[in-house]
Amino acid sequence: NCFTHICMLRMLRSTGLVRGAVLLPYKVCKQNRPLNNFLKCRPIRCSMTPQKRSHKTIGTHDGAFHCDEALACFMLRQLPEYADAEIVRTRDAAKLSDTDIVVDVGGVYDPDAKRFDHHQREFDTVFGHGHTIKLSSAGLIYKHYGMEIVAKQIGLTVDDPVTMKIYLKVYKSFVEAIDGIDNGVDQWESTGPPKYTSSTNLSARVGKLHPHWNEEDSPAIRDACFQKAMALTGAEFLDCVHYYGKVWLPARQYVVEAINGRHTIHPSGEIFKLPRYCPWKDHVYDLEGEMKVDPPLKYCLYEDEKGNWRIQCVSASAGSFENRRSLPAAWRGVRDAELDELTGLPGGIFVHAGGFIGGHKTLEGATQMAIKALTLD
Image (cartoon, rainbow, N blue to C red; front, side):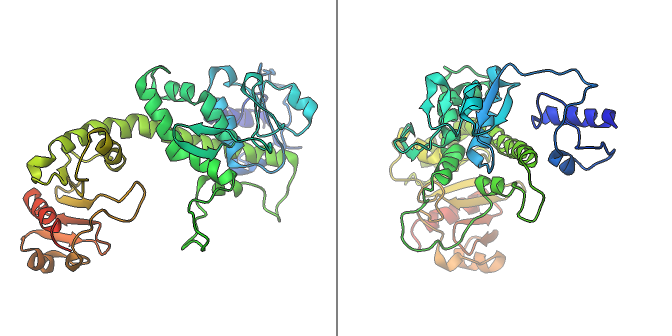
């Protein structure tokens, strides 16, 4: 009945999946219809419900959709000006001209006119701040509105230095990949085939939200699928903003403390100990430059959740599987008593076969493993 679906609508509105007019299934209302099927139903207006029209509209193209415009539309809705905006999906120039802001269609990039397409032959806008990949519609909206969005999400002002730090980090760690994929930019500079493929990135998962070739398809169904794409990209975007603002950035002070105390661990200054476990890897690369760390850090010591101690290698660069200095080859893949015989340090737990991490029952043992590893191949 209509009451059932009005309740469902309220739930959907709370997630940002549905805004504006009430949606009811095509032709009939069936109680207990699964949510996934409900989202695919053709929208019609319910005359029993007062109509609340949005004062703003966001235009984008219809038909097949991609990750960039789904995220662009979601990000715009995080702004007070477009919080209740209706999404108008069309390629009709006359209809687009009536919308308040347009993304990913129209052949115009003009921030003053609020037109954000990137498909023009002459388009070459990049994010800046050292980034050189051409922007997609997601990157364009983030470039112009991201500071305001980030500030709102982490509860700071747009002129707070922390806002800028999170704004830049979210672009590098999240939005840039969407720009690169949408513009067909390879991650590597090589003519050879990749060693493996990945089909689980956000852009790929958005692509799988389209109706399949052997399923029912219609403009209304695609519009409903686009709402799902907005919800998917938006949830991951907000998770990213909140992570870097509330989890990653607060860890920086502990990494600074550990680096400052590195010479108390070993005179070389190549081993550092975290006062508590926290996300440390990204901070190391930034802080080494800021703090003029030389020689570069090689090993990080930290206590794990069981009270044992880990020795982990610092990667050659962010995201790399290559270590600056791996743990000794003779230790790799060895555990317990056999490891103790090789290291001469009772209490060893393991060294990974990849040589990037090992464990010991005590801080002293882990420290001595790291010191020995500095001179053993």
